[in-house]
Image (cartoon, rainbow, N blue to C red; front, side):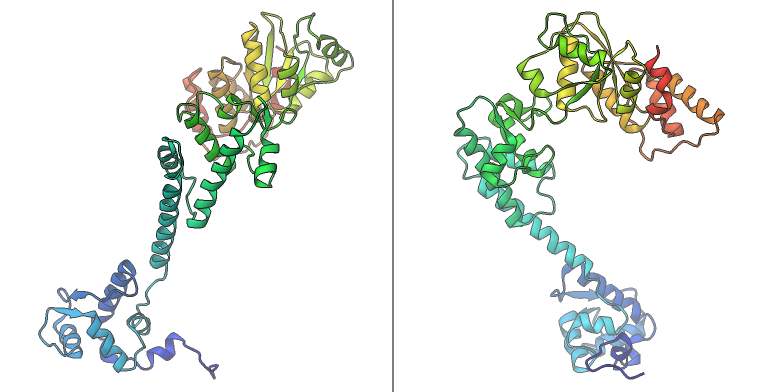
Length: 415
């Protein structure tokens, strides 16, 4: 086979390697040298002890570098002799020719760590120029939270700069309420830059929490505390037979929807503007999936119901809080999977009562599927604690079979 000009294959490189350098346990020595260079970098030229190698190999190496009888090999001298022999133009290249190539991955990892560290240091330095005393604590927190992971200097500086832009823009606001979408579009040019969960939103929310006197984001939404909303109509709550008081301004609209068998849609705007007053002692069922509420509407169930549509939105959570605050009893039912059980626990922490979400209910659902010859999907994720029924965690994690609400429509809608 004729090689193309400039080809540099291992076979061609090996053709200039003296066979004496591959005899005995010398291949092990070359691998050790390659390993040392991988750890210390391509430019490293230290010494390697020859303990553990055969006398023949020791003699070959020490004679090669002109220092017979030595117990160590100076890699700078070894590189010089390997170049002289024509093995390669440098030590890493010679090691490749000797069958022990230096992996580029450790060096790449070191370079990446160095790049990210420069990003962290740049972010710290930039935050140190802020007038707020909490700025250094804030930047340390976003680093611990991983918000600067895999981000170099330019990206880290941009994040800190954009958070500063948002904070300064908030200082200039005169309205008591504002749209985060408008703020992001006006200041940053992207209407979605402050959407929930984005890197910038998370970093800014932590800065707002510090500005409001602490870093604990679990206690309150720092955006809501300053009147910032993402959207007053997205994330609306689908409801059925909502138990509003008869004198409420929306009571007639709810009654018309009930009469026409149409779900009543509650937006954040409705909660903020009209409020909602509820009949004390009412029983309301919060479900995870739209099909459950749809079925309740179709059969004109008398059960008051709210659909969380998966992970409950801020509007759904706010509606639930108002119901409980007005003395209503809110129950929750969701999918028997890790995510549905986790939602159940979070809603329980808000005062919602898990309903038919116990270990016995889960086992009954599994038996029903088995009897019907239905093969249920498997959840790869274990569920977390289920304090309302500790046995559910153990039973679910034992089986890991998923039971969606849609399989249990009759049991859920008909008490």
